[in-house]
Length: 116
Length: 111
Image (cartoon, rainbow over all chains, first blue to last red; front, side):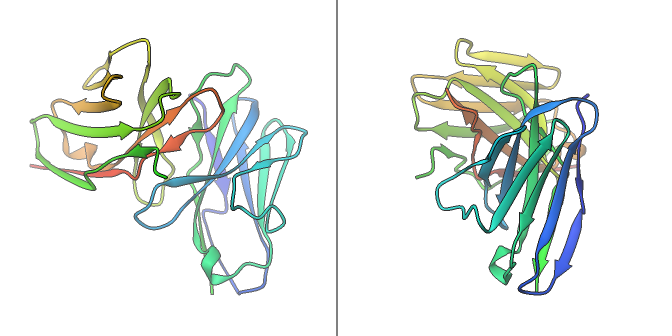
């Protein structure tokens, strides 16, 4: 089956630093990758959609200068949280959709970000 | 504006019995619905889906029912097993790439 990995699985950082989260599709080419955020006891909220080689499309209310997304290849997308603050602490999950299309997304295991 | 709603935050079911998880949506443009299972500190895993042209889809112990007129879908798990204990999210999509998730229902299956 389609496997998506995320690295790191957990990160703790000081306020003001930047954190990069990687999302990789291990056994398929992902033309589209999605980044979600989940706060405790809440739903997964889509942050942005990225297509390989083009700029990401951000959802309303998500600061594109704060959450930098790069989808440089068909197997890798990165999310960089710049100048992180405690309110950015959350569970970040990526998903990927293959070149064959369809509505099914394959999710990574998530990254727990804690900003002190 | 919550377009996909799961009104029961939790459900407790005895092993062997049926678990029924419900989901309601408001957007009539949604035409494809999915159920995901999620364990703590992990990403969601896909369970089963249904297209709006169908009213039922079955895969092993999992069956999803869709009632378009009521804008309601449900996931039936039978028989329920302790390993089914997790948070279940329904999600919907229409003519865009976006998956809109419900808030989830925590299922606990006890022996």
